[in-house]
Structure formats: C-alpha cells, structure tokens
Length: 303
Image (cartoon, rainbow, N blue to C red):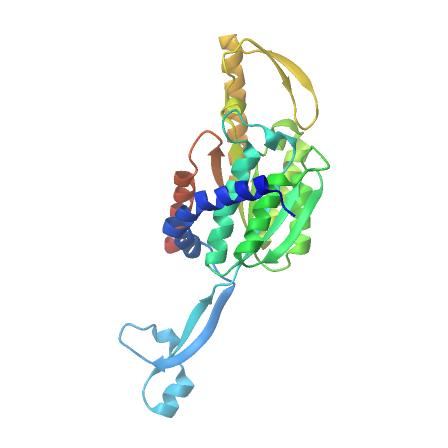
C-alpha cells in the first residue's frame, strides 16, 4: 500500500506537467524524435506533386496508369530515462531539490512519450545501477516511474555514469531515446582519465541510441551566497570543507571555477555529439525544454 502523502506528491507532479504536455510538448516530442524507419501502408493512384521515385512500376504496368507506394513513419519508440539518484541530487537551496526537478522533467518526457504511444523505461543509478524498470506503455506505468525517481532510497551515494551507460546498452538492444538526467558533478571532481572514459561511454551510447543530456544544477552550486564562513559537506564522498563565503574574492574565484566546469562539460557533450538541456532548480523549465525541441525540429527539417 502506497502512503497517501506519496500518492499526493505524484499526483501534484502529474497535474503540473499535464497542461504543458497537452498544449505543447507532446506534439514537439512527436516532431523531433524519429521512428525506426518507414512502413509500407498502401498503394494509391499517382497525384500531381507526388514523388516520382515512389511509383510502383509493377502496379502501374498492370493498371495502365501510375500508382505510388505510400509509406508512413514507424512511430513506436522507446524512451529510456537514465536518472542519477546519487547523494548530490538531494541538494536544493529553494523549494525544490535537484531530484524533485529530475522527477518533474521525467514526468513531462514520459507523458509526452505515452501520448505518442511510445514505451517508457527507467534506469536509476549511483555508482552502480540501483533499479531497472523495463519499458512499457500507459499512465499507471509512468506514475510508477515518477514514484521510483522521487522515493527510491539509494544504497550508494557516489556516481558512475559509465556503468549506467554500459547497462543501458546491454538491456536496450534496439535504438531508443536515452535521456540522462544528472547534475554531472562527477565531471568536476574526477581525473582526466575518468573524464575521457565518460566521453567514450557517451559517444558509444550515442552511436546506438539518441542520447540527450539533461543537466540539473542549483544556483548555490554555481555561486556562493555571501553568508560568511560556511561548512560544506560533499553529499557523495562525505568530505567536509570550510569556505569563507563572506570574502568577495573567494566567491568570484568559486563562480569562475564553476563557469569553467560548465564550459568543459558543454565541450564534452559537443564532442560526443549529444544534445544537452541546462536546467536550474530556481528557474522555470518549460522555456528551456521548448527551446530544445525547437532547435532539434529546425535541424531535422534542414538535415
């Protein structure tokens, strides 16, 4: 039996995201994510303006006037949500933690998927794969996915993106839309060798699937508040450091370092040919998602 407060929170997310999905994103989702190919639908008489290369010459010869083969895009897709549930996701300086925003973004994408008759699956990861829900259709299934993102209690606190992507490749043999939702803080703290490994894993995953990175950050991870001396604990490693946030020079140095880290991560995504969406817990996400879909739609039309 699911506690009432959990059901209430899931229902609130569904209500918040439903209007956005209905009015905008479900249609944009349909436009920008390609199916697996083209399926033959019917043969019909040629009409002015039809593509000459589509003429069915066998039927045309038998009937003595031109007929064409009509194809439709095979629409059924699989959306795999690959969601980071490591310790750093619990942080949030405002009303919403990073993990709560991750659940909301997953809700928007999952409901857009099922409105287009696509399947939705889930991989929750820390430095190991914590949970795998195979792809299925339907509202009840999506509500389960949201519940797991919000309320799964991880066994570990660290992050290993490479392991999650390798698992994705093993359990998803056919091409899928793979949306990785994470703060990607691992790229700020690991060695260059590990960063190269992440780049290789992302590039390899993107060859097989359509990988999209959703990076979620909090404003106080980008700039320190002027609150004097702060004692900070790393949610993944447990390391404790003291920072003098009252010093303007220290705050400026911290902000510069975070800007550099963001630029490094953006370069990593570009070199792996992965589209990325940047979101913050203190800013509305609808506009950022809309821009992402519009950019991909333009590229698809002109590609």
